[in-house]
Amino acid sequence: MNFNALLDDDRAVSPVIGVILMVAITVILAAVIGSFVLGLGNSVQQTSPNANFQFDFDSGAGTATATHTGGDSIPSSQLSVVGSNTTTFPDTTVSAGSTSNTTDVSTSDQIRVIWTSENGDSSQTLAEESTP
Image 1 (cartoon, rainbow, N blue to C red):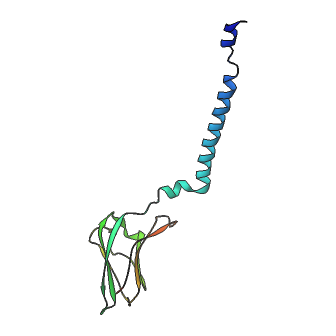
Image 2: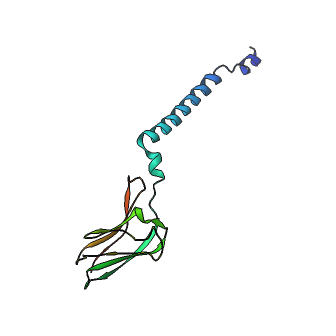
């Protein structure tokens, strides 16, 4: 028996490695194509900002004031204050100290600060409070 011939016989290694590489390439391509088809690549970049808002209510005047108290600065075009009517922030960039007044507020109204992504595909409520 020739032991050197057994040790030098590595014909089966090449096809096994080839199959493993082809499976790996197929899985990676399927993941990339699937993320583009399902639009997951776009939604990853559309995260909502982290911002804090405080609400002050004047029941006599029927107004509510939403004040940005900290966190990320946000373009005002992406924010709206929703109650019985919808208002926006007057500043072009909403940062700490920016306020928005909402009128025609009655008892048990829900006042919300809503962020909408630039392309309008997603939105999120950043703050919410009920009127007293």
